[in-house]
Amino acid sequence: MEPCGAILGCCAGFAVGGLLFAAYKLGLLYQLFHKAETKSPRHGGESVAEVLRAHGIKYVFTLVGGHISPILVACEKMGIRIVDTRHEATAVFAADAVARLSGTVGVAAVTAGPGLTNTVTAVKNAQMAESPLLLIGGAAGTLLQGRGALQDIDQMSLFKPLCKFCASIRTIREIVPTVRKALAIAQSGTPGPVFIEFPIDTLYPFHLVSKEFAVKNPPKGLMGKIVSWYLNNHLTNIFAGAWETRDVSPLPVDIPQATDDQVQKCIELVSRAKKPVILLGSQATLPPTPADDIRKALEDLGIPCFLGGMSRGLLGRDSPIHIRQNRRDALKDADLVLLAGTVCDFRLSYGRVLNRRSKIIAVNRDKSQLLKNSDMFWKPTVAIQGDAGSFLARLAKGLKGHRCPEEWPQSLKAGDTTKENTNRAKADEKTDHHLNPLKVLHLVDELMAEDSIIVADGGDFVGSAAYIMRPRGPMRWLDPGAFGTLGVGGGFALGAKLCRPESEVWIVYGDGSLGYSVAEFDTFTRHKTAVIAVVGNDACWSQISREQVPILGSNVACGLAFTDYHTVADGYGGKGYLIGREDEDRLSDIIKQAQKETKEGKATLLNVLIGKTNFREGSISV
Image (cartoon, rainbow, N blue to C red; front, top):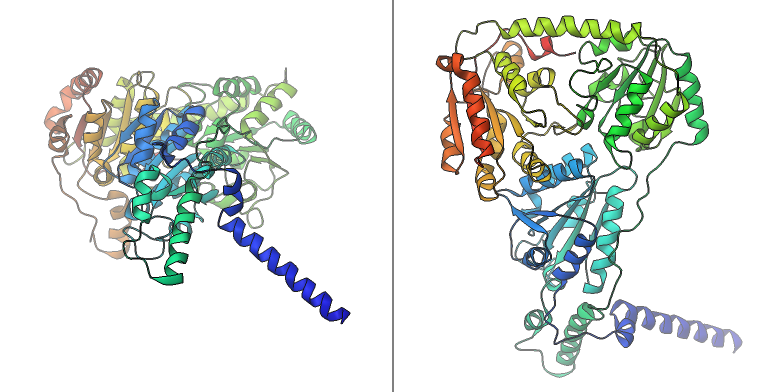
């Protein structure tokens, strides 16, 4: 009988455990000590807003939908500015720009289903650009998901590959800790996007949600009682303990750092180098090290630097150690290369441009990016998973009094001057029709204000701008990054203008990329964010056509038209200018007039008709 007793005891234990687990999952145990305040008018959107305000969030970008209305209304009441755009992707791009320029998390909120699917490209762009971003999404009610509700899809499966953290809120009491956790994760380690979906019944007040849970014709008998009990319990559990006081303050952010031994080893390598080169990526500008501290560290080291991504402008306009041209040649001659947040992907030919005889120091927060392609084309001498900015500051401190031999950066700067003089001569060449695009870009660069922020959105025209236009300071150049996404212009400019309202914000558009966000001129007008757009209009997807025609013999799908984009800007409440060859002599005056219009509060668009050129983008690049 003893074995039978043991079996019965074991079964009883399992039964009790099962009941306790069921009680936990149904929220019965929690509800014993935390009640639902059924008369309270409060709603879950207020909890979201409280956390965002405590984290210093100033803007939430959105395209409105009923699923997320409580969040937007609560944020507005708490002093967070709601900025609504004409496309959900623009909302995310704007949040991305705010994250890059402010050092905080950018926030976008969109409605369920198609609202969220419209953001996928922008979220992937933020992931690859390593921007800390919180995407808030609406969702069908907790009991209706998977049952065919309006705009109900499996949103979590879409965003898990794109985000560092994904969560679906099931009860109001989860909102505060989940949002705090998400914001910390977005900024920790390698920054990136996070996603939280909010089922609609976790956002609205009890009295409204309870109406949706009421069963008009419940089944009779025992089944009816079970259904009614389950629905009532589910409703009560959503609101149980909802309004109890919770800590909304920011959680600690984890930032990986180089060890003292790693820094010391790099100090020794740099001190022995005769021809060192530093390649800086966007990671070098991330918090916590201020950009000015990084600039001073680089100037103290005296090592020639190539700047990419958000680090463009870090050394000012005319620094003797900032090298813009002939990067491939410099890397061939270098005896030491420091990759500070720079990745050996397509932009460095997967590492093949690095001299195998060079000592290579790689610093990156992300281990996979740190060692990308190192098993094939290159090998680091020292690989450090850590923050690039603070590493540079520590390196300069350890090398105090030591400078790179001056003849090395001087020789590279001389090559820079020669190449740029050649490029400027190309700007004086006459095109068969319309204006020379390089001349237009040189003139814009000369006339733009010192505090200008440049947003790059396009292919051929923008590729030329990258080698002509000079950001005057750190974080004054915004481009999509490694994903090469078109359509960032409207959102990036919107976020930039809100962060730096005193600055001129220039969007450099190709006529192809303009089509993605020209409707945001309506947003610029409504939200009084006056930016300047210069559109290189050659009626073509030229970057594609230039290769497609000679290789495949057809210009199919590459042709556009010399569309009146300036009229579109006028229609949205901005000011448009059409500029052709007949305006060449007064081009400077038109640009100045556009700057004046912008200062007076009007978003302006310069529709510049540019000619086909005989020089390729590659001829004015590295």
